Image (cartoon, rainbow over all chains, first blue to last red; front, side, top):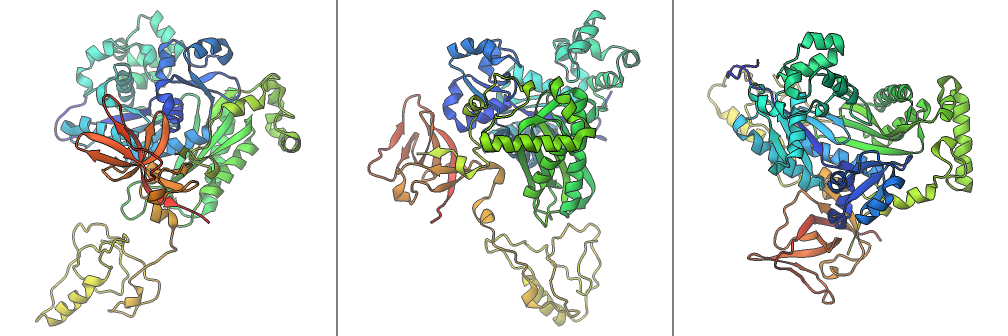
Length: 429
Length: 182
């Protein structure tokens, strides 16, 4: 058990995440939608990938096919829009940059989640400080966020869930130390624990483990043998022992590849090399999963909170007209991003990419994404691109995307690039 | 120990304030007094490097300096003027919007102007703000009269908007600049 003696500061990790992130982004620029349910569709499948609280409470599930629920959504007077990753990527960068002003030790986990290390802040005022962070993020960006604080990452995530479920005022829930959590853990289902998917949850249930408390008190070694080392780490973290790595549990529906440089870099070539590597790795992961991605966010930044250096953090989002797992396209997009973002002067500490809008690639497309065929694939892509350019989008597309999907309809539903294109700024009267 | 160009004698000065464009002390100003004081002393102090010096951001001098005396021309390091730096003080909280109406002509805000909107600023009486009225974004001047709040236009054709009863005023951001191209 972690002692609370003054010799070592109690570890406090905060997990900050945006509430209904995509829907919230849309609402910032359409204030009238604050009072209407909002749903966001994936480009490819016409499924709901984001729901505002009203849709969640109406029981419409994540990934619900749009056509199946269209009538119900119409009756609810819901606003349904296509995903606008250019906007979401930019808003995400703003939220993350705002959060980073409060602590030097911060890790962006996914497009809408970040870990903050709040160890060392006065415990008596920690909750208040957390509320200040949350309020500032909301005021500066318009995106509502929630914060869970705990001694380990798993407990911080747990606290974050409680915060949202119980609608804690101030949007911050501090679970406190690991010693006195029995009551809280007893009321928490294992399926809701970070890292426990449906299959593990079912398997644990058959062994009589239904709550986080029961999992915490299970035999860690036996669990490791039965499941994996990640399960063992989960159990230790529930006990207050910090051992989870970020890579152990991937964020849902996104692939993030980023790395801090050992030494600061200043030249563009190093950044290009780094993102090329990240893009290749991302492409491999995509193909392993049998997925393709519809958008990529590229990020470069300096080290945080160095008083000698101004903080420089920029990101750009590339939307692929055709969802891709082709490494050449991913690398091309990543490099184009760096070209656009690079500025001489700052000493960069980190570069990374995030693959967004991930959907199942069809069997038809597998052959094209085969690495050995990369030349033909590139030529094929070029032919398709030039045909579409000459004769209009959608002239030639992959059969796997669905013959009935009309590109025009998707364009109609997508909101504007409010923060990245001069021609698409919000209007004010 | 902090890094400094090796040809300078080490004086115990306070950390130089960095230029922030707001009339801060120029780096090097204090040194003239230190030199005069030094020359008038009967015996030189014995100076030692501090045990835990705070980090010191010193400008890099672009030309070589003869030992013992800086050239005044080198006290400043200047870069190109950057409009972004002039206009934007909280990048993560700054958005741009396009004006479409004439309600704020009297304030020098015209249709098609670009407004720099800073959400990090607190709206005060007299601020030009972007406000949400009936679900739409609008640019108006904020008026506070005790507990009452009003949004004023600067065009006689547009009446003021008062907030009474349960009506809520939502301020989207404070307008901190306007940009017009010809």
